[in-house]
Every structure is written in structure tokens, then in C-alpha cells.
Image 1 (tube, rainbow, N blue to C red):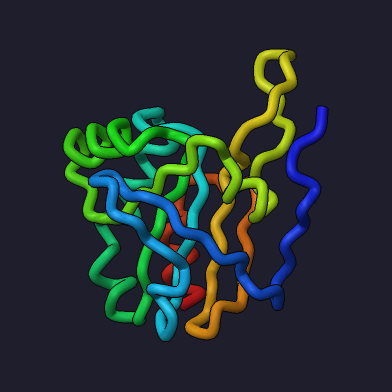
Image 2: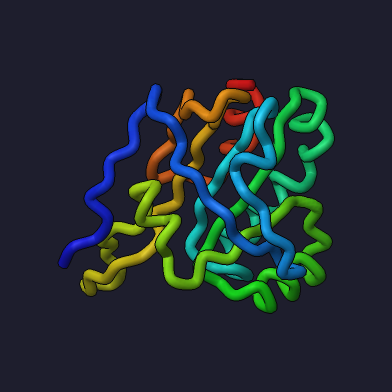
Length: 156
């Protein structure tokens, strides 16, 4: 089983992307030049860990904005799914739809996972911090949701 063999490292230029948000509006990495970008990849809308993470990022959005940072969540869920997720949990962050997981492959987060003895390809929960010049300055791989948002904010 092969997943993404792209291995992004701290110090690499972040790969360019343009993806639609919950309302279908395109967001491109270049739109955020001059800001820090907290790019977080998560497996699925409305699952317990993903909901907790999105709610936490939303709760601290103002603090991130105060540190010149924007938060972008990415999953393979559709724009419609993201809109329901945003509405249900009153999320205030931007969620991007990557249904064919091309961006996740570029960033090396679409990898083999195991669950209940089965191996399959999926999104490995990962957060990357991109500096205002588009360089990756920190990577959290296989993120544990509890206290993660505070840790990311502390890094800024």
C-alpha cells in the first residue's frame, strides 16, 4: 500500500495550493503572503477528535489573528460537508475541501493508517506552521488533539 512518499521538512518552501472553502470560495497559499499560516490536516468532519480540534482552533482564532496568523483546516470532505460542520459547531475558521487528496499527498499527510486491524490510506492528523515568506517552520505529525491548539499558539 503506497501513500504519499513526499516528505516535507522544516525549512522547505510550502507547496502552492488553491482549494475551495465551505462556501466554494477559493483560497490559495499565495493569498496569505505576509502572514503565518497554521495549516492543519484532519481526517473527517463531525468526528470526535476532529470536532474538538476545529472547536479549539475556532475558540482561539482571535489570538492567532493577533499573532498575524490565519488558520486553514484541510480534509477530503466536500464543501457541503464542511458547511454543515461549520454551522453545527459554529466554527469560525476556514475549512478547505481536498476531495481527491492531491494537496494532502503534496504535503505528505495522505499515508497508510491502521484501524481495527485494517490498513488503508487516509489523512494523518498533522499541523504545519508556515512563515510569512512561505517556508515551513514547524511540523506536528500524528497530532494528539488535547492541548494541541495551545501548543501551536505558543509556538507563534
